Image (cartoon, rainbow, N blue to C red; front, top):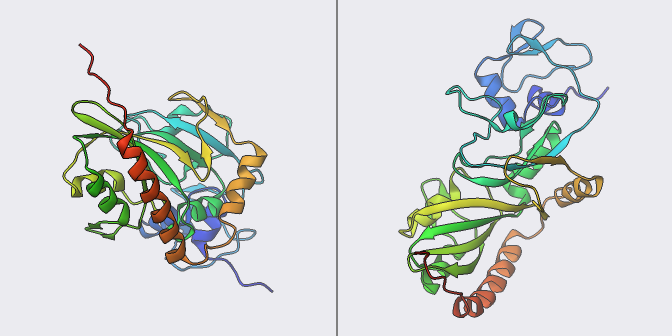
Length: 275
């Protein structure tokens, strides 16, 4: 007989939430098994035990759903918001099983966001050990120098630890602001904003344009579409195995970034401000 799975794994496979979110639900006392409040680390049999979340019975979903959403600004990346603000779930029509977002985007950020009921894939896509690339277009106030961009790309120390190396490509400048593209392989809370604040710059606009090798395409803010089978397969292959030598991968990205940066920094187009 195979060992029973832990409750947070069951909830993720049922499409209730990611494993991390399921653990939070258990800690908050929102999950019961056969009428008892569940505990972290508890195991269960989903075919026999009665598992409830917020007093509602949850069952294993037989179909997997993967939606790509272009999240607008001023929308919360969560299933429910206690403050009553609009959430990403409000963008999706009824008829789908219970979905949850993969990772988060800031309230005032926009762009690429996945919704799914596949807890296993959501967990792997969100876990930093899999180094899933996420690319952002960033508008900062001011004009970072080449040296500052190189320093930021190597990693900076934040309150929750040093950041991993990332790829930064300058795009264009105005008299007062700069547009850059950043590719990170980790997704901490407000990470892009905090990285630039560390360098003395404030982020004026932030949009995620790619995730895991997939892009928004022609989706407008507020629109969504199901992922194609080939796109789902691409994501699954991306996180099928943990990456090999992390240090080697980071070094390679840094070398590519620095070589491109010296060329692009000299070719940044200047844009005259509108009257």
